Image 1: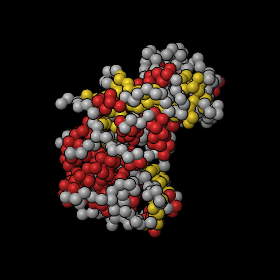
Image 2: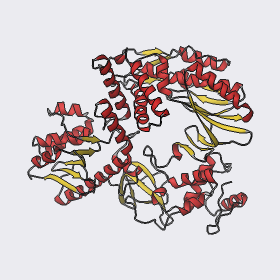
Image 3: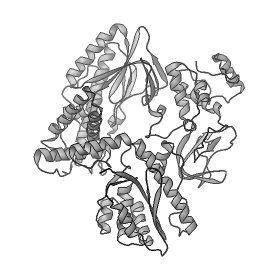
Image 4: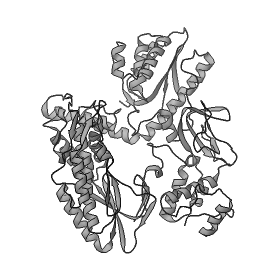
Amino acid sequence: MKTTQLFLDCEVYRNYFLAMFMNEAGNTRSFECFGDDPMPVKQIEEILYAEGIEFVTFNGIGYDLPILQLVQLGNRPAKLKQASDDIIHNQLFSWEFYKKYSVTEPTVNHLDLMGLPIGQVGLKLYGGRLHSKKLQDLPFDPHLMLTREQANIVKRYCRNDLLLTRDLRDNLSKQIELRRVMGEEYNIDLRSKSDAQIAEAVLKAEYFRLSGVTPKKVPYRQASFKFVPPDYVKFTTPELQRALDVIVAAEFIVKETGHVEMPEAISGLVLTINGRTYQMGIGGLHSQESEVSHYADSSTQLFDIDVASYYPSLMLNMGMEPLALQGYFREIYKGILNKRLTAKRNGDKVTDACLKIVLNGTFGKTSSMYSILYNPEFMVRTTLSGQLSLLMLIEKLEQLNIPVVSANTDGVVVKCDVNKKRWLEEAVISWQDITNLQTEWNEYASLHSRDVNNYIAVKTDRSVKVKGTYRVGDIGKNPQNEISSLAVITYLQTGVPCATTIRECSDIRKFLTLRTVTGGAEKDGAYLGKAIRWYYSITTSGTIKYFKNGNDVPRSEGGRPVMELPETLPDDINYAWYEEESRHLLFDLGVVARPQAEPMPRKNSKAWKALLEESKVKLGHKGDWEWVL
């Protein structure tokens, strides 16, 4: 039977209840109760349990479905409001709710999007990140008694939330399809699970398949432990030898939250290798470069050397197992890893992507005390062994006078003399044999780093690898005037001046800044909401303010709120602001020298004109200059 998707959302006030369903075309059906009106119990049940419908929600598991269960028992809005507050303020899990209110969990065909994106935030913020048409806060205080006119306004607000949910569904279509494929493979409903939850569900299913027994959580009872390095970890330089001694001697404390406390001796450990510094930590190894650019030329090559399946390979190398899966974990996990590598070699992108979710999600669950995979010692041994392994490679390469210009968690970037490439290859092969790890290589034409976590790398084929603040169109981060980053990326790729890219862009979405404001924001007395967005305008003065205290929202001077996207590009965009921002990005990346005085001189000031005259790069835009080199 063909399945039809309906989007579902509920709103609850003391005297008003609304359940709204929306189809793909944006048409809605509302079932509501105002004051003493009859509750639409039968109508909701008829649509909720209709065959051939898949309901799509954002937090439906935690909120909408529990509320609808109470509705079906005939509860009035006042009682629903008490339950709603219980969920929100007491942060009840769904299973806690069903137990407390003596209702059963519904069996409906349901896809909850809330757990799918990495870096979970609220629906409004996702809407902003996806450049949804309209961003809108709940229009009335949730504790009010609504009038009928206000209830109608809430209905329009609810429909906008459903449109945001549809936008998010569209963005997550690939992840949703992968979950459907994996669910059929393992006969589990994975549609609403996060990557880490999928990993746990798949491993439990595989354990049951092999043992015939459902695994049960085994409590981890150690209050502390010490790190035991792999036998192959050995260093030749005194500083790294001393560092290894410090790490082995340190005691790791497991806190009540289940997380591991990083020993002070390690958190303060900064290593210097051939003049370059590195910081260790629970999260990984990080080099400490900043505001620097590196270029390949006829005598020098830049190679990005990443470890393939980094954490999965290390987890198998450790020889450890989660307590609940002892005796089977390694067989299950190694089988999944081998299957994934085979799929990758054969170009089977779907299987590759599915199994990557399982492999990487497993590591994430080792640090969750609520998971059957929880094992903090396993997690720490994996991360520290990986860092020490990378330090072995770095030490060897520096001894060969092959500089490591960047290192981050699962790989290094090296600047290699063309005459030493064979030495580099031999050193990496030897390291792979020792560590039982494999590497993947990319060659760069240039690497431009604000720091180790924020950079733009231009490959030799002129494609780019972008990380951190310079990424655009990433649902995991708020857009911040992306046109400036795009202009810098385009300049580094092709040499097209930043002002050209900025002034030729006709997409308002690329000019927007999005941020959350605690307590909400306002501009010139008009309330905007908690998730706000704006562009910089030549006709707007002043700042956007915090609604509660009147303080300035950072970097909002000259910002014009745009809570609903216009149909056409505004004619008041402050292009000079975005050009100046691109120049700052170039400074941060070490592409050009930072001026002695900060901040950047204001447009048309004497200092500004002096910089332009010095740069000698002329553009054809109304006599302006572009300072890029």
